[in-house]
Image (cartoon, rainbow, N blue to C red; front, side, top):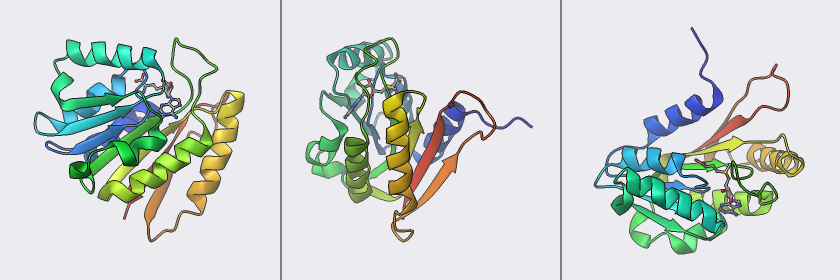
Length: 190
Ligand SMILES: C[S@@+](CC[C@H](N)C(=O)[O-])C[C@H]1O[C@@H](n2cnc3c(N)ncnc32)[C@H](O)[C@@H]1O
């Protein structure tokens, strides 16, 4: 048997959580790979809300979802994910079954624009308010860069003290790999 690597494990969780007709959130759209995956999972009757602060990410993701003819089931916002509560329409509140954060910087983009612990944690708090019970938040934590290590530490602190009556929190990490490989935090809303 081969253990699931980090990205396949993240995708697998989302495949299990998100089904046809659901609402889902891509909190860091970047080049849109996760947006496309979520849009495929929600089908024609569901919807994906995507966030990124960079215009480049919006352009790249728009072109990718248009190519795959998924444009009608996706709404993209050039906003920080800590605005998601005010941005996602009320009709989706209580019906979001999956959300994903790929932390760090845009691959091939400006490495100085990175996710920050404060807004990441605010966005998680907001998601916990508006997701449906048993909805899953998947965070892929890249901590090989300086700010990534700070974000990792604050996230781990936040997750460790999250009330177990509110959420189950899982960490999936290869412990013996060198060079700070990414790991997963998965949060299931109770
Ligand atoms: C690792 S990339 C995401 C990669 C993406 N999943 C893909 O498929 O290409 C991280 C993204 O987070 C974005 N970002 C940084 N801070 C953010 C914030 N506060 N809200 C939303 N997106 C943010 C960056 O602009 C960057 O595009």
